[in-house]
Image 1: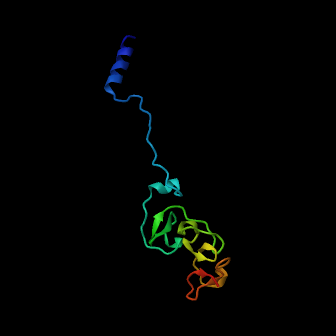
Image 2: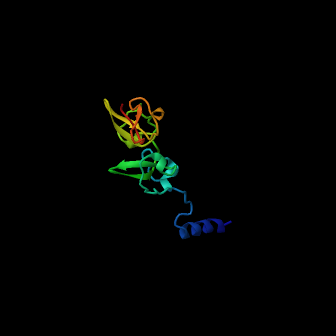
Image 3: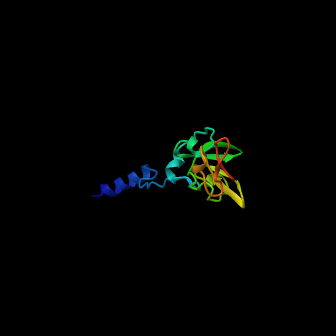
Amino acid sequence: MKLLPLFLLSFLLCCSDPFHINTRQEPPPIKDTPPTALYLESSNEPCVFNRDCPFHERCQCRGECFCRVGIRGSGVVGVTSCTNSDDCESSLCIEGIGGNFCSGPCMEDSECGGMFPVCSIRGEICVIR
């Protein structure tokens, strides 16, 4: 019975932290980034729209546009006002009447609406009439 306290004392002395509790800190959250995406790397591929990027990335434009890990916007073409491309479902925020609005890719007018009812002459994005 006298050996038990001696055993515990020797165990405590030999081990730096015998009662170690996992205190691993998770990295701080990145705004608008899903937790699973925190551990993924960006492909850094050039893009024009979100559809050009892998599912866990968005087309992020800061001068030039590249695929970066993050949540895609949900702004609707011609309806949703935006401050930058991250706000829009397509990743395209352009100037409209009274401010900036989300636009998006199109092949014909039926794919457009709201502030941007017309598919541009070249069939690329929804624009003002």
